[in-house]
Length: 434
Image (tube, rainbow, N blue to C red; front, side, top):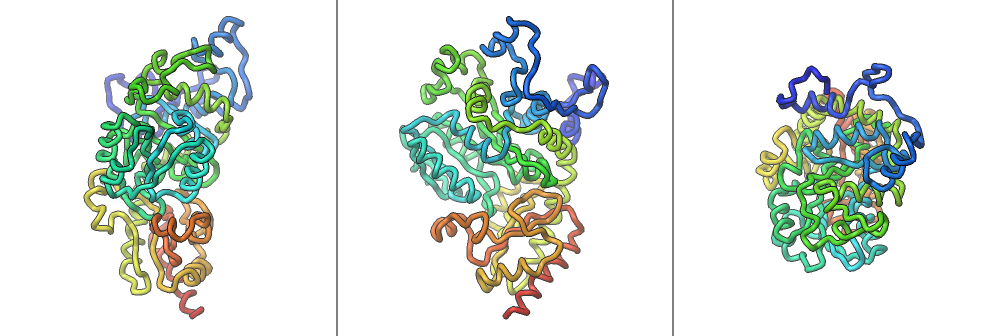
């Protein structure tokens, strides 16, 4: 932030969404963060180059590992989430897999919510099989199930703040206590909430992951992901030799002892990102920085529109269920606790008539875009059972809260009356096909 700002002043979220990680470029005075479109960097001298590669000094070596534009995005995300730092990746799935790859070894066990994005369920199943890691899915609402699933080999608990697409709300603080008692981290996907609506680290989460593609970017232009670390977890508690013990990849460097609270992030960047290569491009980082500047303004509009549309759907006889968290008595207390500004803008509703009715409904809409994404300024619609969650069997679909007539909406920032008008066209299309 600018030098004239008082260093002892606590800045608000809106201000930090614009200024965190952003400084005028010193050589030109450019106010916008430059796009450092470079693969590599000239070293000052051989000694500095060696120090960078030995992690004895922090500096740019190669854009697969770090880049000034990407670093600005990482700083802003960490600031908004209340973390100690962040590492950006080429996609949300890349961020998620890298975060897990960094701390899991063959024979480990992880416990995950069953109410997850279908792509995440698939990734966890295949990743665990390839890594020889045991995986247990549990009902995220059942705290006793989380405890019962723990074993001596359990290394992480994983869940989403707002389940995709079932709309369940995770009791973050309660699950964080379970993780803390077991001496393992809680990792939370906060994509649907964003740090504007909820900051899981404040409720005890240790690692937060994002698909930056969604609300954080906000305009459907770029793919990206990020991992934010609280810096509070003790990786030297005996359960994580992969992070705490000497690393053969860095001349027996002990990441946690050397870097303290930054140990996990440094290993994530210096080993996992370096070796797997899922780096975010500088241009995408630039676009995400632009999106973050309007995040709080957009989210207020998103959640207001979503609730208005959900209430309208709830009054229709041809809708069997509306699964907006704020309209579910089961989650009202958790919404008030964790999401006081709004329970997100992605929710599902169930049509009478099943799969055929769902597909006809989508054919009838015009303003909603039929595509596999969420978190756009434009409103989006999809039929999960035949698209995003198609790889799941009937049992897994039911566990994820998806039926044959389930429609998922991602409500944008248009006029709510226009969105309701368009949905009426979908209902009219069903009527003409019966």
